[in-house]
Amino acid sequence: MLRGRAVTLRPATDADVPALAAIRAAPEVRHWWRGGDDLAEAVRADLADGDLTTYAVEHDGRLIGAIQWYAETDPDYRHASLDIFLDPAARGAGLGGDAIRTLVRHLVDEYGHHRFTIDPAAANTAAIRAYAKVGFRPVGIMRRYERGADGRWHDALLMDLLADELAD
View 1 (cartoon, rainbow, N blue to C red):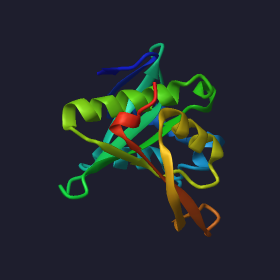
View 2: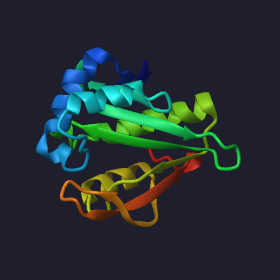
View 3: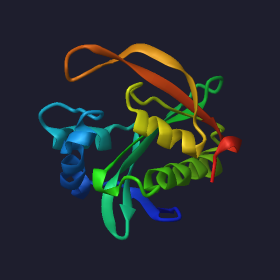
């Protein structure tokens, strides 16, 4: 269990799949986090991915989303990459930032990571603003990075954060 100011992060389990799939099904989340027709299977696949660590994000005892990370293990390029989604009803209260800060501090303290990346869709201005509040900085546009639900390729913004730049 990792405790932030307002959130708790705990390893996500199979018991969380229905709730996480329901959050992923919310139109505001699904737009950015697709996953095919079976969102429960998409969540299960993330939980089963040995290279990915997924935490359930809880606030006031309620599951409000997930945050996950994976590591680039090549010692010459070592860093951790993050991704997060929250229930739209939980947005706007700083809970996503709290979850990110909590996970980053854990990754610095327990794994010695010094650099973090996140790659929101370039059009996801709300996420980009939220990541900037935590200290992430734009690195550059990754052109035609991800195929959208519309079948077209869309740009993403690569952002990074150095451990000593983490904002409170």
